[in-house]
Length: 112
Figure 1: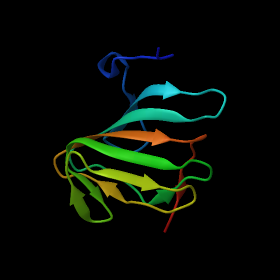
Figure 2 (figure 1 turned 135 degrees about the horizontal axis):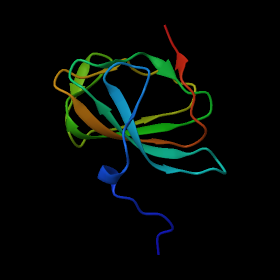
Figure 3 (figure 1 turned 45 degrees about the vertical axis):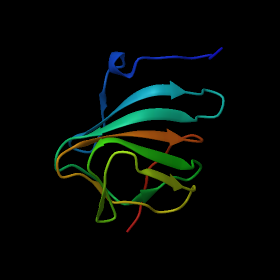
Figure 4 (figure 1 turned 180 degrees about the vertical axis):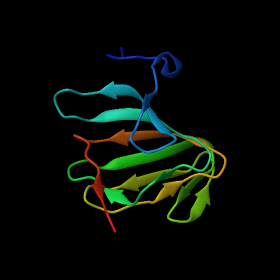
């Protein structure tokens, strides 16, 4: 039996400090800081190039166009990034939703 279940649509979206970007936290492990979120990006929004100090990250495109480092990817695309590895910028022309998992406590370290 699963220890946790949630309907993503029942979780309120939390706007981030990035215009047009919000997340719905589906799961957060208080022991490790690991978390799973649905990231919603409005048309034209951008998440700047960055890395994470402790967390490996996976991204699965659910819908829309997810642009990673200038290349557009559609639904079904899966990404894996190890901690301390710069990635992005992430962008979208028409908007997108992605399922994002972090393996440890999340931070956002800007990268040039």
